[in-house]
Each structure stands twice: as C-alpha cells, then as structure tokens.
Length: 293
Length: 232
Image (tube, rainbow over all chains, first blue to last red; front, side, top):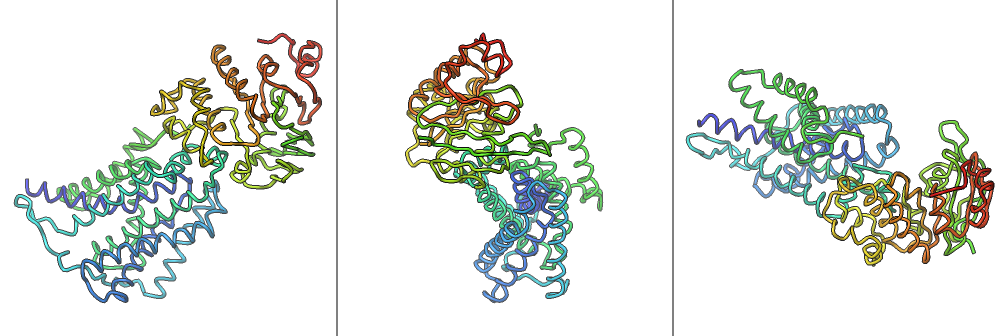
C-alpha cells in the first residue's frame, strides 16, 4: 500500500511536469494548427532564464528566489515564443510542412547557440533546501518537490481554464479553435489571440523548464528532447486543443510510466507508446478531442 | 446616395475567373437583393467585399476604400455579415455566440431578443444543438447587435423548412425598414417582399440592375434566372 501511494503521488508529480510541457503545445496546435517542434526550446529558454535569475540576480536558494525565478523563466519563454510567432509563424499559417521545418530549425539553432555559449554540461539550478525533504503519507516517504510540481500544474490549469472560460480573449480562442475565419468576420483581430496563445504556451513550457531542471538536477541545452516527445504524446492522447484532455492524459501517462517502471523496470516508455497506439486505434481524435469536420 | 460601391471587381479562385468586373452601388437605407443562378458568383461577391477572397478593383464603403484591408478592419468600418452556411460556433453557447460578436459599447440586445424571443430562453444552450432555423437566428443576431452601415446577408433561408423561412423572412422584413442591406437570396417571394432594388448576376458579372417589380414578369425571371417565374 505504501508503495502504491508513493508511486501514485510521484506519478502525479511526473504527470504535472508533462502537463506543463503539453498544455501550450495543445493550445498552439488546437487554435492555430501550428505544428511547433520548437516547443522544447521554450522549455530550455525558460530553464536558462530561471537559472540566470537564480544565480545572477538572487544569489540564493531561498523559496522566494526559486518561485520568482520560475515565474520569470516562464515570462522569458513566453516572450521568446511571442517573438518567434511574430517573426516566423505569422507567415506560415496553414503551411504545415514549412512550420515543421522552420520550428525544427529554430530548435536546432537555439540548441546550438546555447550549447556553444554555455556548453551542453548540466548546470546546477539552486533549489530551496526543503526540496530534498520528504513527507510521510502512511508509511510512504514522498519527496516534497513533487507537491510543488503538482500545485504549479494545478495553478496553471486553473489559469488556463479561467482565461478560456471567463475572459473575452478566452472566448475568442475557443471560437477560433472552431472557425477562425468567422471570428475574423465578426471584426476580431484573431492574430492577437494567436499571439496570446503563443505567449501562454511559452509561459507554461518555461515554468515547466525550470521545474524540470529542478527535477533533473540542472539545466542543459539538451534537456528538452524526451520531454517534448512526451508532450506530443500527451497532446495526442488528450486530444488536440483540449487543456482538460492534456491534464488527464498527462496524469495517465505519468502514473502508468511510474507503475510500469517499478514493476517491470525499463519498460515505462514502451508501455506509454503502446498506450498511444491503443488510443490512436480506438479514438484517433484523442480522449477529449473533437472529430474534425 | 450609395453606401457601398464596387467597381470592376475581379476574383480568381484556383485559376478560375469567378468575378469578371463586378460593378454596382448599394443605395443607403434600402434592401438590395443580389440574384442569380447557382455558381454565378453571388457569395464570392460578398466574400470579396468582406476581404475573405482576394480581389482586384475598387471597393468603397461610405466613400472610403476598404479594398485590401484585413477582414476584421473591414468589419469594423461598419459591416455586418451573415454567411451562407450560418457558421455559428457550435461548441459555444448561444450567449457566447452573441457576446463574441459585440463590438459596440451598447450592443442592441433588445432588438435581437425582440426579433427572436426564442433565443432569450436558450442563452445557455450549446449552439450546435439548435435547429437550423434557430442557428440562422443566431447568425443574423450577430450582425444586428452592432450599429452597421450595411448588412451583407447570404442566403438566410437556405435549407430551412417552409415555416422557418416565413419566420426568418418576417425578421428580415422588420430589420429591412431601418437598415441598408445586400441580400443574396434564391427565394423570390422573400426578395419581392423585402427588396427595393435588385441586382442580377450571371457568369461573374452584373447583368441587370433595377426595381424588384421586374420579378413579376415570368419571362424576365425565366430569361434572367432560368426559373419558371412562379415562386413560393
């Protein structure tokens, strides 16, 4: 039972990180149909900005410094995403192959620049001392940092849902997912909504980048690889454009992977891929996705 | 005095020359009906005005060029648009479908709910679950919420049951008294009822402009529109 609790909670924590990576990816594809392979770069940029804040501005590993670094990392990644959208993506709407090529190019270029500048070595991200603590639930010792990942993911989920459900920009985004042309024909500059989505997606990935750096022990330009792949898997399983779907899929994958890795060590990734194939066969639009007309 | 003016407007779609020098003016405070056989370019004309189709030529609204502007800016100059297939946001509620269309600081919900009281009782309902007629009400309402210089309405009775056609026709007749409207419509009975000016298109050109009284002439209708002249 203790093992079950431990694996479940760490699985939820892992799922929270997957959600942070996948939520922006889902929104960006869901609203704009942009296949953004540079999403992992947002994560890396966020992690580096967070690292810079933490080591160059604060010079401390206090909780306050970490939280602010995480938020600034998110903002930095959001601004990077916005710049990329304005400079490159606005010219490539409805050109999926070009989008894929350009965003892969951005990911390679930024990765190379960061690698050349900082090297690909892991740079330690200062984390608050309590990160290494555990809390006891039953007889299970749960690492405390997992709760921060879960709380952050919940907060961002709440913010996304709040924006989508209760603000005008959210209304425009929801309508734009369905029929972008008609939104424009109502006198709305839908590009602004697109930019807002890119910023939000970048922000979530940036926050995720800082937390992933804490989870992995540091920051490196190569850190995005497997996380981006998992982000895509979450989005496909959850359904494109569905934030709730991404949350459920991220949880499902996080927990599944943890359990499988515990009982059949090393097979976690394989089972996640099997899960992906099963969902694609049974429900190609994803668990919460809509069938396109 | 004309509100909307098109001069020598051409549209090409995938190499096909769809509009071939469309020229007309829409008089203010009147309903102008744009008629023609299927596929002659009526809907494309509206889309060209809206900036939804790339075109060449001149398009002016109230004397100012709107040609080449982004669609959202064209709409903000004072155009309300009801597209051919309603294009409501099916996943949003009726209320959200109306709210997203609001541009004015004081949107005219009173007019909308007086024309379509049924919508007031269905504000929370998902628009995709409405009947075709109710969806058309939502589509028309979106255009009526704001003060526009002109309404472009594309086949509002298309695909509706006869009872609903009457309902939509009644609403358009009520709005017609107070608005400038360019109405694309196949239903000649409705055109005769609300239009004060007609344009007839064929092969991407305007081939006739005049009074709707011409539609009483069965031979005229047959020669221009290729239909019998007896209508609904």
